[in-house]
Length: 139
Image (cartoon, rainbow, N blue to C red; front, side, top):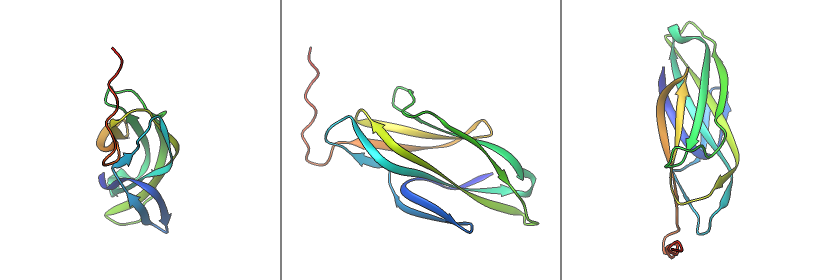
């Protein structure tokens, strides 16, 4: 199994096996928190060898710097049906609605396939350039 694309983006579609991605990003700018990012998607393109055809499990975990889940883990199954090719590609798109961001820092999106961690993406929640720093916490 080879991950050909793993992107956080504004939107994605699959059109007859063609993965279309709009606005890939790794940073969200927010001057005040909490805030809600209305819509984004995780676009994934996997290449499977002929020997990997069949049922597979997928999970996405979005966690903060403390390892706490930001959203409920997204889990599901997918089936790779084969042709007589040496490998087959499959596109998966996971839409995320109303992503609530509560603090500045780095989030991680972990991809698990068949129960094994494959790769991760960062998502930086940043203050806009030129925005004042947050006031210190009361003592």
